[in-house]
Length: 517
Image (cartoon, rainbow, N blue to C red; front, side, top):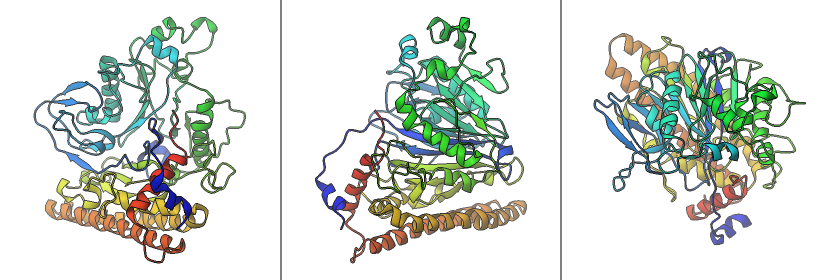
Protein backbone atom coordinates (compact mmCIF):
# COMPACT_ATOMS: atom_id res chain seq x y z
CA UNK A 1 0.00 0.00 0.00
CA UNK A 2 1.34 3.43 -0.86
CA UNK A 3 2.44 5.68 1.97
CA UNK A 4 -0.31 8.33 1.67
CA UNK A 5 -3.02 5.70 2.12
CA UNK A 6 -1.35 4.37 5.27
CA UNK A 7 -0.69 7.74 6.85
CA UNK A 8 -4.04 9.31 6.30
CA UNK A 9 -5.80 7.65 9.19
CA UNK A 10 -3.67 9.77 11.52
CA UNK A 11 -4.18 13.13 9.83
CA UNK A 12 -6.35 15.74 11.49
CA UNK A 13 -9.19 17.59 9.82
CA UNK A 14 -8.60 20.74 7.79
CA UNK A 15 -11.07 23.60 7.91
CA UNK A 16 -13.20 23.79 4.76
CA UNK A 17 -14.05 27.08 3.04
CA UNK A 18 -16.94 27.74 0.66
CA UNK A 19 -18.09 25.78 -2.38
CA UNK A 20 -16.90 26.29 -5.93
CA UNK A 21 -18.07 25.10 -9.37
CA UNK A 22 -17.71 25.36 -13.16
CA UNK A 23 -20.71 25.91 -15.46
CA UNK A 24 -21.60 25.67 -19.16
CA UNK A 25 -24.72 26.72 -21.08
CA UNK A 26 -25.23 25.93 -24.79
CA UNK A 27 -27.90 27.52 -26.99
CA UNK A 28 -29.98 25.29 -29.24
CA UNK A 29 -28.41 26.59 -32.48
CA UNK A 30 -24.95 25.87 -31.06
CA UNK A 31 -25.75 22.22 -30.28
CA UNK A 32 -25.46 19.22 -32.56
CA UNK A 33 -29.15 18.26 -32.44
CA UNK A 34 -31.05 21.44 -31.62
CA UNK A 35 -31.04 20.79 -27.89
CA UNK A 36 -30.32 23.30 -25.16
CA UNK A 37 -27.59 22.08 -22.80
CA UNK A 38 -26.96 23.03 -19.18
CA UNK A 39 -23.94 21.62 -17.33
CA UNK A 40 -22.17 22.18 -14.01
CA UNK A 41 -19.81 20.45 -11.64
CA UNK A 42 -21.08 20.81 -8.08
CA UNK A 43 -17.87 21.15 -6.09
CA UNK A 44 -18.04 21.00 -2.32
CA UNK A 45 -15.68 21.60 0.56
CA UNK A 46 -14.26 18.06 0.53
CA UNK A 47 -14.96 14.63 -0.96
CA UNK A 48 -16.62 13.17 2.12
CA UNK A 49 -19.09 15.65 3.60
CA UNK A 50 -21.24 16.55 0.58
CA UNK A 51 -23.28 13.71 -0.91
CA UNK A 52 -26.32 13.63 -3.16
CA UNK A 53 -29.21 11.37 -3.94
CA UNK A 54 -32.11 12.01 -6.30
CA UNK A 55 -35.58 12.85 -5.06
CA UNK A 56 -38.97 13.56 -6.64
CA UNK A 57 -41.12 16.41 -5.32
CA UNK A 58 -44.76 15.65 -5.99
CA UNK A 59 -47.16 18.11 -7.58
CA UNK A 60 -48.90 20.28 -4.96
CA UNK A 61 -52.53 21.34 -5.05
CA UNK A 62 -52.30 23.83 -2.19
CA UNK A 63 -49.85 26.51 -1.01
CA UNK A 64 -46.95 25.70 1.31
CA UNK A 65 -44.24 27.48 3.28
CA UNK A 66 -40.61 26.70 2.43
CA UNK A 67 -38.07 27.15 5.25
CA UNK A 68 -34.33 27.37 4.78
CA UNK A 69 -31.93 25.08 6.60
CA UNK A 70 -29.23 27.78 6.61
CA UNK A 71 -30.99 30.82 8.08
CA UNK A 72 -34.43 32.18 8.97
CA UNK A 73 -35.75 32.62 5.42
CA UNK A 74 -39.38 31.56 5.02
CA UNK A 75 -41.26 31.93 1.73
CA UNK A 76 -44.85 31.01 0.98
CA UNK A 77 -45.07 29.13 -2.31
CA UNK A 78 -48.36 29.52 -4.16
CA UNK A 79 -50.57 26.75 -5.49
CA UNK A 80 -50.38 24.78 -7.59
CA UNK A 81 -46.82 23.56 -7.22
CA UNK A 82 -45.13 21.75 -10.11
CA UNK A 83 -43.49 18.38 -9.53
CA UNK A 84 -39.74 18.15 -10.08
CA UNK A 85 -36.69 15.92 -9.84
CA UNK A 86 -33.71 17.27 -7.91
CA UNK A 87 -30.40 16.30 -6.32
CA UNK A 88 -30.40 17.88 -2.83
CA UNK A 89 -27.50 18.09 -0.43
CA UNK A 90 -29.86 18.63 2.52
CA UNK A 91 -33.00 16.61 3.22
CA UNK A 92 -36.02 17.87 5.14
CA UNK A 93 -35.35 18.34 8.85
CA UNK A 94 -38.50 17.62 10.85
CA UNK A 95 -37.04 18.84 14.14
CA UNK A 96 -36.10 22.28 12.81
CA UNK A 97 -38.87 22.54 10.21
CA UNK A 98 -36.34 23.04 7.42
CA UNK A 99 -37.30 21.77 3.97
CA UNK A 100 -35.30 19.72 1.50
CA UNK A 101 -32.77 22.23 0.19
CA UNK A 102 -29.39 22.82 -1.42
CA UNK A 103 -30.83 21.27 -4.58
CA UNK A 104 -27.91 21.46 -6.95
CA UNK A 105 -29.77 20.47 -10.13
CA UNK A 106 -33.41 19.91 -10.97
CA UNK A 107 -35.98 19.75 -13.73
CA UNK A 108 -39.71 20.29 -13.29
CA UNK A 109 -42.79 18.91 -15.02
CA UNK A 110 -42.95 22.01 -17.25
CA UNK A 111 -39.52 21.18 -18.67
CA UNK A 112 -37.60 23.93 -16.86
CA UNK A 113 -34.13 22.98 -15.64
CA UNK A 114 -32.03 24.82 -13.08
CA UNK A 115 -28.59 24.41 -11.56
CA UNK A 116 -27.16 26.33 -8.61
CA UNK A 117 -25.04 27.84 -7.44
CA UNK A 118 -21.90 29.23 -9.10
CA UNK A 119 -20.29 30.90 -6.09
CA UNK A 120 -18.19 34.04 -6.59
CA UNK A 121 -17.12 37.15 -4.72
CA UNK A 122 -18.63 40.63 -4.88
CA UNK A 123 -16.69 43.84 -4.40
CA UNK A 124 -16.52 45.06 -0.81
CA UNK A 125 -17.69 48.49 -1.90
CA UNK A 126 -20.87 47.01 -3.39
CA UNK A 127 -21.65 45.01 -0.25
CA UNK A 128 -20.91 47.96 2.00
CA UNK A 129 -23.56 49.97 0.12
CA UNK A 130 -26.07 47.10 -0.15
CA UNK A 131 -25.23 44.41 2.45
CA UNK A 132 -26.22 40.77 2.30
CA UNK A 133 -29.27 39.81 4.34
CA UNK A 134 -27.54 36.99 6.18
CA UNK A 135 -30.40 36.15 8.55
CA UNK A 136 -33.36 36.20 6.18
CA UNK A 137 -32.03 36.38 2.60
CA UNK A 138 -31.64 33.70 -0.07
CA UNK A 139 -28.60 31.53 0.51
CA UNK A 140 -27.21 28.68 -1.59
CA UNK A 141 -29.87 26.29 -0.36
CA UNK A 142 -32.83 28.29 -1.70
CA UNK A 143 -32.93 29.03 -5.47
CA UNK A 144 -34.12 25.73 -6.95
CA UNK A 145 -36.44 24.90 -4.05
CA UNK A 146 -38.24 28.22 -4.45
CA UNK A 147 -38.32 28.56 -8.23
CA UNK A 148 -38.79 25.09 -9.75
CA UNK A 149 -42.25 24.57 -8.21
CA UNK A 150 -43.40 27.71 -10.03
CA UNK A 151 -41.39 28.31 -13.22
CA UNK A 152 -43.01 27.56 -16.59
CA UNK A 153 -40.04 28.72 -18.71
CA UNK A 154 -36.39 29.59 -18.18
CA UNK A 155 -37.17 33.30 -18.54
CA UNK A 156 -39.93 32.91 -15.97
CA UNK A 157 -37.40 31.24 -13.67
CA UNK A 158 -35.05 34.22 -14.01
CA UNK A 159 -37.90 36.63 -13.32
CA UNK A 160 -39.03 34.68 -10.24
CA UNK A 161 -35.53 34.40 -8.80
CA UNK A 162 -34.83 38.07 -9.45
CA UNK A 163 -38.08 39.06 -7.74
CA UNK A 164 -37.19 36.93 -4.70
CA UNK A 165 -33.75 38.52 -4.49
CA UNK A 166 -35.19 42.02 -4.72
CA UNK A 167 -37.74 41.24 -2.01
CA UNK A 168 -35.74 39.12 0.45
CA UNK A 169 -32.18 39.95 -0.53
CA UNK A 170 -29.21 37.62 -0.98
CA UNK A 171 -28.01 36.04 2.24
CA UNK A 172 -24.47 35.50 0.94
CA UNK A 173 -22.32 35.67 -2.18
CA UNK A 174 -23.93 32.63 -3.76
CA UNK A 175 -23.21 34.10 -7.17
CA UNK A 176 -24.80 32.67 -10.30
CA UNK A 177 -27.74 30.44 -11.24
CA UNK A 178 -28.32 28.53 -14.50
CA UNK A 179 -31.80 28.17 -16.05
CA UNK A 180 -32.86 26.48 -19.30
CA UNK A 181 -35.79 25.08 -21.23
CA UNK A 182 -36.19 23.62 -24.72
CA UNK A 183 -36.08 27.08 -26.33
CA UNK A 184 -33.37 29.02 -24.50
CA UNK A 185 -30.99 29.33 -21.56
CA UNK A 186 -30.57 32.12 -19.02
CA UNK A 187 -27.94 32.92 -16.41
CA UNK A 188 -28.43 35.19 -13.39
CA UNK A 189 -25.64 36.87 -11.41
CA UNK A 190 -26.01 38.39 -7.94
CA UNK A 191 -24.14 41.67 -7.53
CA UNK A 192 -24.98 42.70 -3.97
CA UNK A 193 -27.63 42.30 -1.31
CA UNK A 194 -30.54 43.21 -3.61
CA UNK A 195 -29.09 43.85 -7.08
CA UNK A 196 -28.77 41.30 -9.86
CA UNK A 197 -28.50 40.89 -13.63
CA UNK A 198 -29.73 38.04 -15.87
CA UNK A 199 -29.00 37.47 -19.56
CA UNK A 200 -30.29 35.10 -22.20
CA UNK A 201 -27.60 33.03 -23.89
CA UNK A 202 -27.75 33.80 -27.65
CA UNK A 203 -29.00 30.64 -29.35
CA UNK A 204 -25.90 30.17 -31.52
CA UNK A 205 -23.41 30.52 -28.66
CA UNK A 206 -22.18 28.90 -25.46
CA UNK A 207 -21.40 30.48 -22.10
CA UNK A 208 -18.77 29.36 -19.58
CA UNK A 209 -18.17 30.55 -16.03
CA UNK A 210 -16.10 29.43 -13.07
CA UNK A 211 -16.51 31.18 -9.70
CA UNK A 212 -16.31 34.74 -10.97
CA UNK A 213 -18.89 37.15 -12.33
CA UNK A 214 -18.85 37.31 -16.15
CA UNK A 215 -21.42 39.86 -17.33
CA UNK A 216 -20.03 43.15 -18.54
CA UNK A 217 -21.73 45.59 -20.93
CA UNK A 218 -25.29 44.27 -21.10
CA UNK A 219 -27.92 46.47 -22.76
CA UNK A 220 -30.24 47.14 -19.83
CA UNK A 221 -32.94 48.40 -22.20
CA UNK A 222 -33.07 45.09 -24.12
CA UNK A 223 -35.94 43.44 -22.26
CA UNK A 224 -35.93 40.44 -24.60
CA UNK A 225 -32.42 39.39 -23.62
CA UNK A 226 -31.69 41.16 -20.32
CA UNK A 227 -33.41 41.31 -16.94
CA UNK A 228 -32.13 43.23 -13.91
CA UNK A 229 -33.00 44.62 -10.50
CA UNK A 230 -34.94 47.86 -10.35
CA UNK A 231 -32.76 50.95 -9.96
CA UNK A 232 -29.56 49.10 -10.81
CA UNK A 233 -27.85 52.03 -12.58
CA UNK A 234 -28.97 54.54 -9.99
CA UNK A 235 -27.60 52.37 -7.19
CA UNK A 236 -24.28 51.81 -8.96
CA UNK A 237 -23.93 55.56 -9.47
CA UNK A 238 -24.89 56.62 -5.95
CA UNK A 239 -22.63 53.96 -4.40
CA UNK A 240 -19.67 55.13 -6.47
CA UNK A 241 -19.44 51.84 -8.33
CA UNK A 242 -19.82 53.56 -11.71
CA UNK A 243 -19.26 57.14 -12.80
CA UNK A 244 -21.32 58.12 -15.88
CA UNK A 245 -19.04 61.14 -16.33
CA UNK A 246 -16.14 58.79 -17.06
CA UNK A 247 -17.53 58.20 -20.54
CA UNK A 248 -17.19 54.46 -20.06
CA UNK A 249 -20.30 52.28 -20.51
CA UNK A 250 -21.73 50.64 -17.42
CA UNK A 251 -20.13 47.28 -16.66
CA UNK A 252 -21.86 44.99 -14.16
CA UNK A 253 -18.54 43.16 -13.78
CA UNK A 254 -16.51 46.26 -12.98
CA UNK A 255 -19.14 47.59 -10.60
CA UNK A 256 -19.90 44.46 -8.58
CA UNK A 257 -17.27 41.74 -9.08
CA UNK A 258 -13.77 41.14 -7.74
CA UNK A 259 -10.95 40.74 -10.26
CA UNK A 260 -7.83 40.11 -8.24
CA UNK A 261 -4.92 37.71 -8.30
CA UNK A 262 -7.05 35.00 -6.74
CA UNK A 263 -9.59 35.21 -9.57
CA UNK A 264 -6.78 35.18 -12.12
CA UNK A 265 -5.43 31.80 -11.01
CA UNK A 266 -8.53 30.19 -9.47
CA UNK A 267 -11.26 31.15 -11.94
CA UNK A 268 -10.10 32.63 -15.22
CA UNK A 269 -7.85 29.77 -16.41
CA UNK A 270 -10.85 27.43 -16.36
CA UNK A 271 -12.91 29.81 -18.47
CA UNK A 272 -10.07 30.20 -20.95
CA UNK A 273 -9.48 26.45 -21.07
CA UNK A 274 -13.09 25.66 -21.96
CA UNK A 275 -13.31 28.55 -24.43
CA UNK A 276 -10.18 27.20 -26.13
CA UNK A 277 -11.57 23.67 -26.14
CA UNK A 278 -14.99 24.58 -27.53
CA UNK A 279 -14.23 27.63 -29.67
CA UNK A 280 -10.49 27.48 -30.39
CA UNK A 281 -9.70 30.93 -29.04
CA UNK A 282 -6.57 31.29 -26.92
CA UNK A 283 -7.62 34.71 -25.53
CA UNK A 284 -4.16 36.13 -26.21
CA UNK A 285 -4.08 39.83 -25.57
CA UNK A 286 -7.25 39.65 -23.49
CA UNK A 287 -6.86 41.21 -20.06
CA UNK A 288 -7.72 39.40 -16.81
CA UNK A 289 -11.48 39.05 -16.46
CA UNK A 290 -12.09 40.35 -19.99
CA UNK A 291 -12.80 36.98 -21.61
CA UNK A 292 -15.84 37.21 -23.92
CA UNK A 293 -19.12 36.14 -22.37
CA UNK A 294 -20.66 34.39 -25.37
CA UNK A 295 -18.81 32.50 -28.13
CA UNK A 296 -19.83 30.36 -31.08
CA UNK A 297 -18.45 26.81 -30.95
CA UNK A 298 -16.07 25.72 -33.69
CA UNK A 299 -18.37 22.75 -34.23
CA UNK A 300 -21.86 21.98 -32.91
CA UNK A 301 -21.72 20.69 -29.35
CA UNK A 302 -23.20 17.42 -28.11
CA UNK A 303 -24.07 16.11 -24.68
CA UNK A 304 -20.83 14.10 -24.83
CA UNK A 305 -18.89 17.33 -25.42
CA UNK A 306 -20.47 18.84 -22.31
CA UNK A 307 -19.48 15.78 -20.28
CA UNK A 308 -15.93 16.05 -21.57
CA UNK A 309 -15.80 19.73 -20.60
CA UNK A 310 -16.57 18.86 -16.95
CA UNK A 311 -13.59 16.46 -16.94
CA UNK A 312 -10.93 18.97 -17.99
CA UNK A 313 -7.82 19.53 -15.89
CA UNK A 314 -5.51 21.38 -18.32
CA UNK A 315 -4.80 17.95 -19.73
CA UNK A 316 -1.25 17.44 -20.96
CA UNK A 317 -0.06 20.99 -20.21
CA UNK A 318 2.39 22.42 -17.69
CA UNK A 319 -0.65 23.32 -15.56
CA UNK A 320 -2.00 19.76 -15.35
CA UNK A 321 -1.59 19.29 -11.60
CA UNK A 322 -2.87 15.72 -11.65
CA UNK A 323 -0.81 14.61 -14.64
CA UNK A 324 2.33 16.29 -13.31
CA UNK A 325 1.68 15.10 -9.74
CA UNK A 326 1.82 18.66 -8.48
CA UNK A 327 -0.80 19.48 -5.84
CA UNK A 328 0.74 22.95 -5.51
CA UNK A 329 -0.26 23.86 -9.09
CA UNK A 330 -1.88 27.32 -8.79
CA UNK A 331 -4.34 26.92 -11.69
CA UNK A 332 -7.49 25.29 -10.34
CA UNK A 333 -8.91 22.80 -12.91
CA UNK A 334 -12.51 22.12 -13.82
CA UNK A 335 -12.29 18.57 -12.42
CA UNK A 336 -11.67 18.45 -8.67
CA UNK A 337 -11.87 15.53 -6.26
CA UNK A 338 -14.25 17.38 -3.92
CA UNK A 339 -17.05 17.44 -6.50
CA UNK A 340 -20.24 16.11 -4.92
CA UNK A 341 -21.49 15.41 -8.45
CA UNK A 342 -21.59 16.75 -12.00
CA UNK A 343 -24.54 17.00 -14.35
CA UNK A 344 -25.51 17.74 -17.94
CA UNK A 345 -29.15 18.54 -18.71
CA UNK A 346 -30.34 17.93 -22.26
CA UNK A 347 -33.54 19.71 -23.30
CA UNK A 348 -34.82 18.37 -26.62
CA UNK A 349 -36.68 20.38 -29.29
CA UNK A 350 -40.37 20.77 -28.54
CA UNK A 351 -42.52 18.05 -30.08
CA UNK A 352 -39.59 15.85 -31.08
CA UNK A 353 -40.36 13.22 -28.42
CA UNK A 354 -43.15 12.32 -25.99
CA UNK A 355 -43.14 14.72 -23.05
CA UNK A 356 -41.68 12.17 -20.60
CA UNK A 357 -38.54 11.92 -22.76
CA UNK A 358 -38.23 15.61 -23.64
CA UNK A 359 -35.57 16.35 -21.01
CA UNK A 360 -32.79 14.27 -19.51
CA UNK A 361 -30.47 14.88 -16.58
CA UNK A 362 -27.19 13.01 -17.00
CA UNK A 363 -25.64 12.83 -13.56
CA UNK A 364 -22.23 11.66 -12.35
CA UNK A 365 -22.55 11.05 -8.63
CA UNK A 366 -18.98 12.07 -7.73
CA UNK A 367 -16.03 13.75 -9.48
CA UNK A 368 -17.08 13.65 -13.17
CA UNK A 369 -13.54 12.81 -14.32
CA UNK A 370 -13.81 9.46 -12.51
CA UNK A 371 -17.54 8.74 -12.54
CA UNK A 372 -19.95 7.78 -15.36
CA UNK A 373 -22.86 10.01 -16.32
CA UNK A 374 -26.19 8.15 -16.17
CA UNK A 375 -29.42 9.45 -17.75
CA UNK A 376 -32.57 10.24 -15.77
CA UNK A 377 -35.50 11.20 -17.98
CA UNK A 378 -37.91 13.86 -16.84
CA UNK A 379 -40.83 11.41 -16.96
CA UNK A 380 -39.25 8.58 -14.96
CA UNK A 381 -41.89 7.35 -12.48
CA UNK A 382 -40.93 8.43 -8.98
CA UNK A 383 -41.07 4.87 -7.60
CA UNK A 384 -38.79 3.63 -10.38
CA UNK A 385 -35.64 5.42 -9.20
CA UNK A 386 -32.86 2.80 -8.80
CA UNK A 387 -31.49 2.28 -5.27
CA UNK A 388 -28.01 3.32 -6.43
CA UNK A 389 -29.37 6.84 -7.00
CA UNK A 390 -32.08 6.93 -4.33
CA UNK A 391 -29.84 5.78 -1.46
CA UNK A 392 -28.74 8.67 0.71
CA UNK A 393 -24.96 8.28 0.88
CA UNK A 394 -23.32 9.45 4.08
CA UNK A 395 -19.79 10.04 5.31
CA UNK A 396 -19.37 6.30 5.83
CA UNK A 397 -18.96 4.19 2.67
CA UNK A 398 -21.81 1.94 1.56
CA UNK A 399 -22.05 -0.80 -1.05
CA UNK A 400 -25.15 0.45 -2.87
CA UNK A 401 -24.84 4.09 -3.93
CA UNK A 402 -23.03 5.23 -7.07
CA UNK A 403 -21.57 7.94 -4.84
CA UNK A 404 -19.35 5.53 -2.92
CA UNK A 405 -18.69 3.20 -5.82
CA UNK A 406 -17.16 6.19 -7.63
CA UNK A 407 -15.36 7.52 -4.56
CA UNK A 408 -13.60 4.22 -3.97
CA UNK A 409 -12.28 4.45 -7.51
CA UNK A 410 -11.20 8.08 -6.97
CA UNK A 411 -9.17 7.22 -3.87
CA UNK A 412 -7.32 4.48 -5.76
CA UNK A 413 -6.70 6.36 -9.01
CA UNK A 414 -5.14 9.28 -7.14
CA UNK A 415 -2.34 6.95 -6.05
CA UNK A 416 -1.06 7.06 -9.65
CA UNK A 417 -3.13 9.40 -11.80
CA UNK A 418 -0.78 9.50 -14.85
CA UNK A 419 -0.55 5.74 -15.03
CA UNK A 420 -4.15 4.83 -14.25
CA UNK A 421 -6.48 7.55 -15.51
CA UNK A 422 -6.14 6.96 -19.29
CA UNK A 423 -7.70 3.48 -19.14
CA UNK A 424 -10.32 4.58 -16.60
CA UNK A 425 -11.36 7.58 -18.70
CA UNK A 426 -11.55 5.45 -21.85
CA UNK A 427 -13.87 3.00 -20.09
CA UNK A 428 -16.15 5.77 -18.79
CA UNK A 429 -16.35 7.48 -22.17
CA UNK A 430 -17.05 4.16 -23.90
CA UNK A 431 -19.92 3.48 -21.52
CA UNK A 432 -21.40 6.96 -22.07
CA UNK A 433 -21.02 6.77 -25.85
CA UNK A 434 -22.98 3.52 -25.94
CA UNK A 435 -25.69 4.92 -23.66
CA UNK A 436 -26.13 8.17 -25.61
CA UNK A 437 -25.76 6.92 -29.18
CA UNK A 438 -27.13 3.35 -29.00
CA UNK A 439 -29.18 2.56 -25.91
CA UNK A 440 -31.12 5.83 -25.55
CA UNK A 441 -32.26 6.03 -29.20
CA UNK A 442 -33.45 2.41 -28.97
CA UNK A 443 -35.37 3.14 -25.76
CA UNK A 444 -36.92 6.26 -27.26
CA UNK A 445 -38.18 4.31 -30.27
CA UNK A 446 -39.74 1.63 -28.04
CA UNK A 447 -41.27 4.19 -25.70
CA UNK A 448 -42.68 6.30 -28.56
CA UNK A 449 -44.31 3.23 -30.12
CA UNK A 450 -45.97 2.22 -26.84
CA UNK A 451 -47.03 5.84 -26.20
CA UNK A 452 -48.54 6.13 -29.68
CA UNK A 453 -50.45 2.90 -29.12
CA UNK A 454 -51.97 4.32 -25.94
CA UNK A 455 -50.08 1.93 -23.66
CA UNK A 456 -49.01 4.44 -20.99
CA UNK A 457 -48.28 1.74 -18.42
CA UNK A 458 -46.13 -0.21 -20.86
CA UNK A 459 -44.20 2.93 -21.80
CA UNK A 460 -43.57 3.79 -18.14
CA UNK A 461 -42.40 0.24 -17.43
CA UNK A 462 -40.05 0.37 -20.41
CA UNK A 463 -38.50 3.61 -19.13
CA UNK A 464 -38.13 2.22 -15.61
CA UNK A 465 -36.50 -0.98 -16.87
CA UNK A 466 -34.06 0.98 -19.05
CA UNK A 467 -33.05 3.24 -16.17
CA UNK A 468 -32.38 0.31 -13.85
CA UNK A 469 -30.30 -1.49 -16.48
CA UNK A 470 -28.13 1.53 -17.21
CA UNK A 471 -27.61 2.46 -13.56
CA UNK A 472 -26.79 -1.15 -12.67
CA UNK A 473 -24.30 -1.26 -15.54
CA UNK A 474 -22.69 1.97 -14.30
CA UNK A 475 -22.29 0.50 -10.81
CA UNK A 476 -20.82 -2.71 -12.20
CA UNK A 477 -18.37 -0.69 -14.30
CA UNK A 478 -17.20 1.29 -11.27
CA UNK A 479 -16.74 -1.88 -9.22
CA UNK A 480 -14.80 -3.52 -12.03
CA UNK A 481 -12.57 -0.49 -12.55
CA UNK A 482 -11.84 -0.25 -8.82
CA UNK A 483 -10.77 -3.92 -8.73
CA UNK A 484 -8.57 -3.50 -11.81
CA UNK A 485 -6.95 -0.36 -10.41
CA UNK A 486 -6.34 -2.04 -7.05
CA UNK A 487 -4.62 -4.93 -8.82
CA UNK A 488 -2.49 -2.51 -10.84
CA UNK A 489 -1.44 -0.83 -7.58
CA UNK A 490 -0.33 -4.15 -6.13
CA UNK A 491 -3.19 -4.98 -3.78
CA UNK A 492 -3.33 -8.76 -3.86
CA UNK A 493 -6.35 -9.28 -1.63
CA UNK A 494 -8.86 -7.07 -3.41
CA UNK A 495 -9.72 -3.53 -2.43
CA UNK A 496 -8.18 -1.86 0.63
CA UNK A 497 -10.54 -1.44 3.62
CA UNK A 498 -13.21 1.20 3.18
CA UNK A 499 -11.91 3.07 6.20
CA UNK A 500 -8.51 3.51 4.56
CA UNK A 501 -10.00 4.51 1.21
CA UNK A 502 -12.33 7.03 2.84
CA UNK A 503 -9.48 8.61 4.79
CA UNK A 504 -7.31 8.71 1.67
CA UNK A 505 -10.05 10.41 -0.33
CA UNK A 506 -10.66 12.95 2.41
CA UNK A 507 -7.00 13.87 2.54
CA UNK A 508 -6.58 13.93 -1.24
CA UNK A 509 -9.53 16.27 -1.78
CA UNK A 510 -8.12 18.74 0.76
CA UNK A 511 -4.60 18.69 -0.65
CA UNK A 512 -5.44 18.73 -4.37
CA UNK A 513 -7.04 22.08 -5.23
CA UNK A 514 -8.93 22.89 -2.01
CA UNK A 515 -11.50 25.71 -2.02
CA UNK A 516 -10.16 29.21 -1.67
CA UNK A 517 -10.98 31.21 1.45
